Image (cartoon, rainbow, N blue to C red; front, side, top):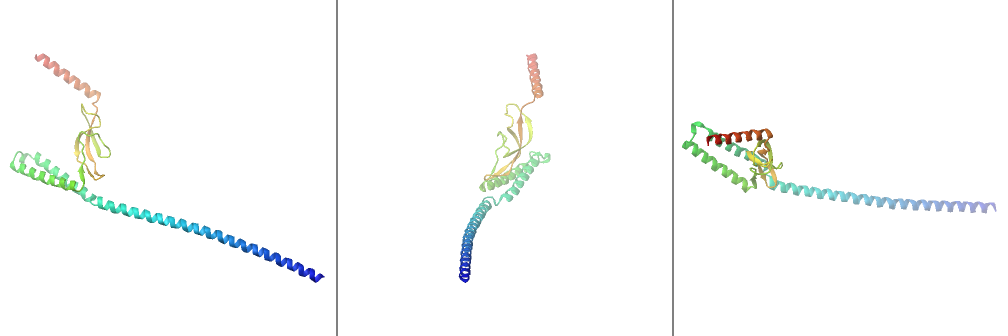
Length: 209
């Protein structure tokens, strides 16, 4: 009787152990399933990021290739502008040279310089490099750099009235800004002086009559 009870108890314990082991086994399988899902999700995220990075690199490469094609001569063009500046300075020096004033040598030299200047401007235009329009234009900080202000009548303040150095653009990019002088409103003191001068002139004419 006692043996039977012991066997029955042992059987219950074994069955209980089997059930617990089976439940643990199920838990492990469930954990494994969740782990695989997480791993798959992580792999999908990594692939998505890698694809995005490849796409960004492709776009950057395309942009760099386009820029190289469109603006590859940017540095060379800036250097060429220095040659144009030197030609203009040389022309001014020849015009101001008292020894050459009104001589045939001065005339021929200036003509040659003008031809070279026009040829260089023509080459620039063929390569989409254009002069910036400045005189009588409203000051544009994207294109002009104001170097001084000049009091002028009948000009809206901020209007370009003098070009110190020509500016150029290359397609949609600024190669260099125009250095300019802009108009400003005449000061009250200057207006008073001008009024007095006009008054004196009128008085002088009146006396003459």
